[in-house]
Image 1 (cartoon, rainbow, N blue to C red):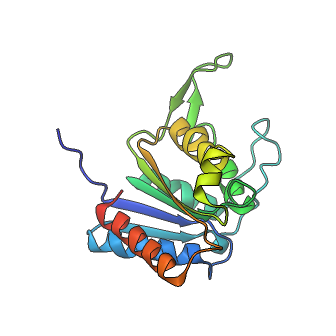
Image 2 (cartoon, rainbow, N blue to C red):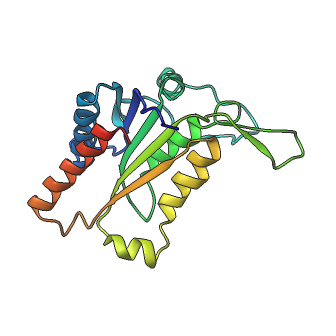
Length: 198
């Protein structure tokens, strides 16, 4: 049985600085996916207007801004969602975390089967995801000493919880200690992932 490659790809560049290396990685992935014939939507998180604070949790509804409604529509549209972002304090930047809090809501990303149950329905099944994550920390240290907390939060606590499968992670570091040649090779790697649509 063969798996059909995704044809609709949503790329979310989650670094708040659009001139960051993460933007270059996201653009490289887009270049590869375009060469593979995918339909692509590309989002710079810094271009979105929204309050990242889920002020009442799930107790009281916080109305979604138009940009967040657009993100939800794009996630529904996509077969494959790519998040590109840096690791800050072992996890994602606050603006991206705020986007997750505001967008991945009950009724959109998941639904508890009953009021008194911990069992839930995964509402975003049938989609795959790729995380491309940069860090100044050496990758071996992040994985073995810290236990990859940001990866676990995004992969297991958010995307797999919502039904994404598979969720693949590409970890790039140490960015701080990298050479120009190494950073160029990482751009090539991102483009190749895009060409494979994974």
